Length: 435
Image 1: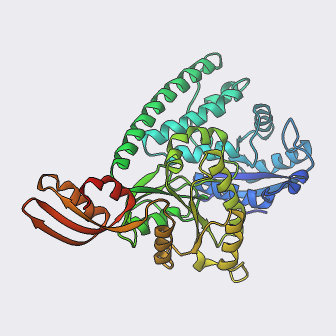
Image 2: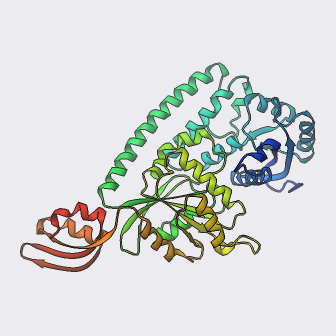
Image 3: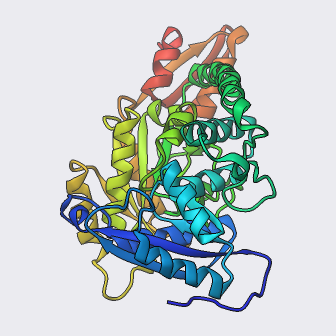
């Protein structure tokens, strides 16, 4: 399937290779090979490549030497030459020997799925923490693939699969990488300490934290901007935003909450990335409520939702209360399952969590979403209360105006009398002023 032939730009020209393993079709929840290859194409576009050809091979087992076998390898070699491809992207994680054999035969750069995802993360990381985490993941991926790479490992000229750590002499690479990994881990430990302090400061203020989670490109950042008025980048590229952002949002009960926009998940998320980004994902594990955003218009909505649940389970956040948000409900194809049926099905698979359909782009359903969040917040009911605050401690009055709904306020000689509807988290903090 020729997708583009003549050179029209300086973007790298990529041929995609996928393998449909017959045995994998019988595994529950396994993605279709065509679907996975289409997702690889999206990743390639996000990384700055033009996909010029897709090849899908059906096999019983993977070839230990080249993944795809000698016959298919000859076919790909001819395509690379005829179409002047710059690189071949493989929809599997390659072993070091497989990658070397492919590059030797094809005489072009070969990048596997894991390298491609790491490359995108390297381009998108903006904060020092994000950059350290990506580099750590790249180094851990590189270590077992050092032997025999030789000159090929000094590819520092740019392009997909070449960003990040570079090497000089093979005999010193391993020692240098180990040294660098230890340095990054120490730096990240310091970052985690700083994040812990920041989280402690946030927890000192009576605000609950909610985390937006979901498959990449589900519309989390668009929803985040809608709910908080933030200017987070939101576009159709995968992993358009990487570093987490935290902003305040106001619920219908007048409660204020902190909303955290986190990195999007993806199937076959490299283990090295899950480990490296554990500090960032602490925002998810510490949240009082998870807002799981699903692209309802995607034919893969069910498998994407399942993949997010798997990652949440890996990081220990599967028991956190959750609501399911079917985004892009206004963009459902005519022949697609309607939002209500899809919601019931996904809710059942997630253990009966509450569901709401919205469009973050148009704002449709946002009022219902906010009301659902209000009802779903654990252990923070709102109740009316009266407070007498001494004149020398009026910070408490400020908190009531900021984080509760004040219904009456008057000043007397010895203090301020305030009547308000107050969430339990703030009520406990101001208990000594209650009358």
